[in-house]
Length: 352
Ligand code: 13P
Ligand code: SF4
Image 1 (cartoon, rainbow, N blue to C red):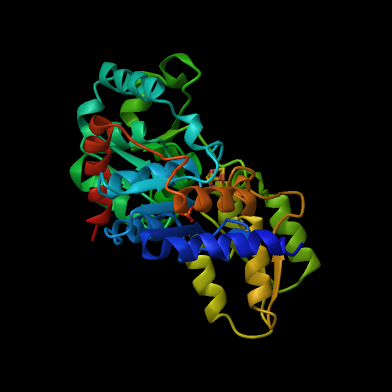
Image 2: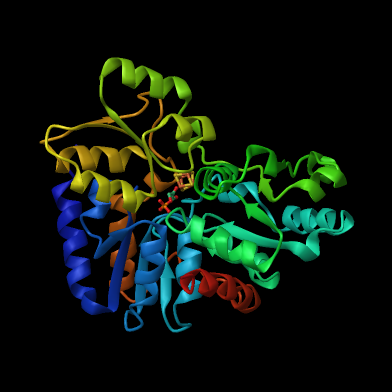
């Protein structure tokens, strides 16, 4: 549905009042009505860099989810305020790894005698606490666009990797891109004593995967791929690496959000594509490429519900409160967490 013209006018007016003082970032999974007001759009890696590249902006309005706003706060100066238009915009995957659970996991690894040779690699989609844990133990953050480089770096630092919290991105990168076998990977279940793993199994593994997943990408199935191939012969199946291993294996191409966008930009007119990623992005891509057939990989999967919490009313409320000098919804990471999380984030930004 088209946006309410009154809200559009109010958003424009508030942004104009703020001028250069505000910088609005929009993740690719945001609603159209929000993307319209973004000064820059990107995947989580690009937005982390873009936030750090605007030291003069007093307010960074992050249209995305909580962990992204935390990362922006860590990478920007203390004088800058990072604002999340709806505080309830979390991420179910990030919530699957708490600081206590991860500390317990590290004790389990220590008891098995492998903590010293294990390097943590944490996906951007994790809380600031998990990023701080990663920095404290000499690890790095990664995103879906640099997971391979992060793992290659980590395997130069140690023998094993503890990959948090998305088991699928960890497994897909290790097995598809780095030649590890499925047997080299074990899944640590934080809800079972000892992670549900014996010390022997931990000692034999190269990749220790946290049992977390994305509630959107994790829903695409092998059947979705088979169905779309039967419906549209010759279609190219392109999926995000947060999808299950069997889906990624059956797909033609795998890539981060930015990679997906680039592939479609370069695709020939008349080609057909089934996309296994978030629906707001798929719809925008379909609208941007009327010369190509772009379909959603599985019609039963829907939007990321927390990304969708950021809507035009929340954005208007946020921008007007900033313009009125009464900032709301500031995201702040405490100094100690920030210090260690920043080590891990800067390690990611320094990856070759
Ligand atoms: P990217 O932005 O790294 O592609 O990650 C996808 C995602 O799920 C963000 O929440
Ligand atoms: Fe989290 Fe998945 Fe939503 Fe991204 S798409 S915010 S990983 S639930």
